[in-house]
Amino acid sequence: MTGDLAEVIAVWIAGQSRRHFEVVDLVRCATTNDPSLVGDPLSRDKIARALRALADDERIVLPKSPSAWDDRTHPPLPRWVRKRAAPEKPKPTRALRVWPEVLSAAAAIATRPDELDLLERVASWLRENPDPEPVPLEERALELFGDEKVLNVLLTKRLFTSGALTLELLACYQPPLLFPSQYVHGVGHPRLLVAENNATFQSLLVLARSLEPAGRPAVHLGWGIGNQFPVGVGAVRLLEPPPQALFYFGDLDVAGLRTAAQAAETAIELELPPLRPATTLYRWLLDHGERRPDRSSRGAVDVTALTDWLPEELRGEVERMLRGRTRIAQETLGLKALRAAPDLISDAVRVTPSSKAN
Image (cartoon, rainbow, N blue to C red; front, side, top):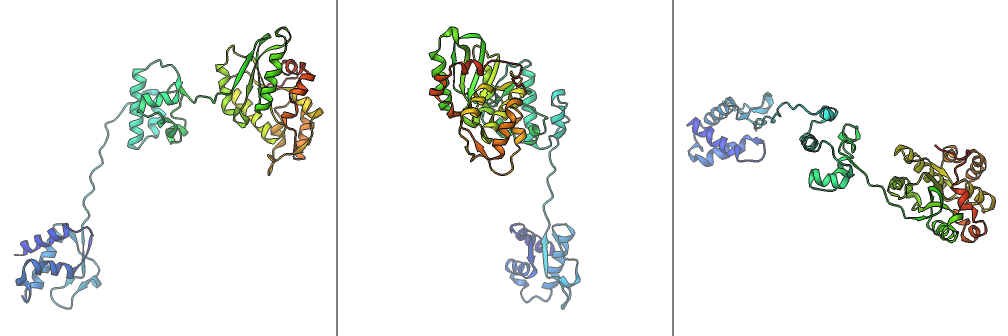
């Protein structure tokens, strides 16, 4: 009978979602299943032996503290019992994997299943594509994962942020933001002059097209789309004919010079020709422009870092202006002023010893 009673209690406990049970619940379960226990002088002994049998079989846990037992009547009964936790399923172990040398650094970091699955995909792709042509990362993501957006997410994860995996390894790249540009045929090797703002780009283009081809430089004129040029300068590689020298002209203020400095750094990283300041145009702004409050100058500003991109002949004057939190908008040099001094374009893209190449 003890075995039957123990099994009844065990089945009832197994069917409950909770793990902790008051003994009164177990007594109720036992008497419901076997009403003869009610009034039976041996019922307490039968229940005690059933609980002990379940504990010996490691199906329940009995309390260890004496205070958790009701010993007012013999035999003592626990005030509660606990369902023993189900044994953890052993985690599947992966067979020892020998990774390609180029993935060894990533393999040393990867521990999660999703990371190991990623390495498996990459290893398989490398094996099948020994000499891949570089493509935009969305195309490679679609090829590898069936989702063109996956790589943008993976770039924020540790296998990429640690440098163990790179876009170069996957033969792909972040497509640069294309900036509007127009090529004007002229004399000499092709150059590029980028204006920060659209109005100045338009005026430079109108003037350049109005000049005689024999008297104007061969130049791409571009619009840097405001502060977006640092992420767009890589599109210089797409220009035809390829420019041999790069020049930039923006607002003389904190925001404009920050954009220029960042774009110049990116050009160096991408191994492009150095991005030089259009010195003649900046000189014209300083000589003719009206200084107004600079709303982009907030908090502490590293003036020296911003002006280091400029040639030495302009730095002092620009530094004083920035420290005074004033600015000169590049639109000051509008179409009317450009028509009055048409040589400004040729002078702006002329490489001289004073042109600063970072």
